Amino acid sequence: MLAIGIESSCDDTAVAVLNGKRVVLSSLVSSQIKIHEKYGGTVPEIAAREHLSNLLPLFKNALEGSGVLLKDVDVVCVTRGPGLIGALLVGVSFAKGLAASLNVPLVPVDHVHAHVHGALLGLPQKISTEDLFPALTLVVSGGHTNLFYMANETSFELISKSIDDACGESFDKVAKLLGLDYPGGPEIEKRALLGDENAFPMPKMMAKKQSLDFSYSGLKTHIVYTYRNMKKDKKNIDDLCASFQKAAFEQIIRKVKIVLQSKRAQSVRSFIVSGGVAANTYFRQLVAQEIDVPAHFPRLEFCSDNAAMVAAYGLALYEQQKNKEDFQKSYWEPYSRYS
Ligand code: KG4
Ligand code: ZN
Image (cartoon, rainbow, N blue to C red; front, side):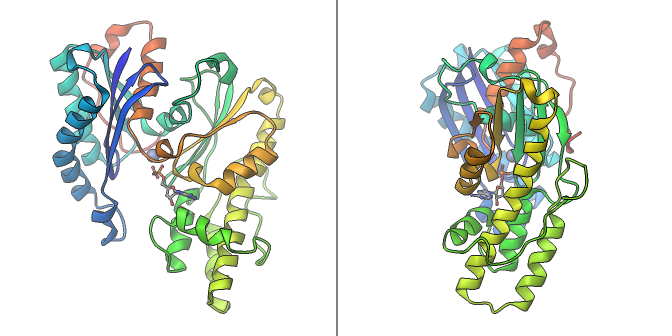
């Protein structure tokens, strides 16, 4: 099946064309980072206006790059939420119009859940859905640190989440404190490579509590005090980045291990990691060393926001929905928050 994916939930406009769930024919992303940088964060109205001017040319380029003719498209998939409502409205309106004009089904998808499917893009066909699910899945980005149990590729049961900052958000905030560029994750990873990860003692977040939830604000506050009291030379900053990065990821590894020891997790066949933070090489190595079930990470281009993951998840939803006519109804709306 040929699917078009459309993503406009935050500050990336994205369009992709897929031939089935894993084969990406084209995937384009137009980033607004440079525009929002000077404001210190994404400005919702500017984001929406940028999507409005970027989406149509991006769509035309993605279609041309895929070699697919519009008349052959079988389904349109679009991010319904969570995200900035004005930004979402641009993508959703465009997708509704496109699906109506082609007279094909329109599949609305949850952005956070779609990230998981980004990790499966390009997987060889010999790895079947049954080889992957039930799965433990982690979406770790600038907005989310969510751990799910997934009995199959479309069922998401939230096991735990961050009670304060998301993991990526803590990288961004710590980087800002240390005077590094935005987004902070890749900058901290680079500096950490040069540092000693045991140089500064770090608190073990949520260690005593039975809760499987994550917390990052205490770690961030600890960095604020450590930074205030240390000599601010290059070596110390490298060491602090390495120590912070280790603590940030050890918390995740600890919780994932606890979940994998539970009775129910005995049937889990894979650990699927996705979201912007999944690009981190140190984290990938830590997972390979510490987690016993087979792990899957997205290709780098599919870690951060993209529309290929939207089309892939939309196709999975379309396949498993018995009543296909449900996708012809267009009275649903976008939603801003993760529920
Ligand atoms: O998924 P994403 O592109 O956007 C959303 O938040 O939805 O994730 C962006 C986040 C940022 O917080 C960024 O600092 C983080 O992912 N990130 C990283 C790395 N690359 C991106 N964090 C740690 N290490 C990295 N290499
Ligand atoms: Zn995202």
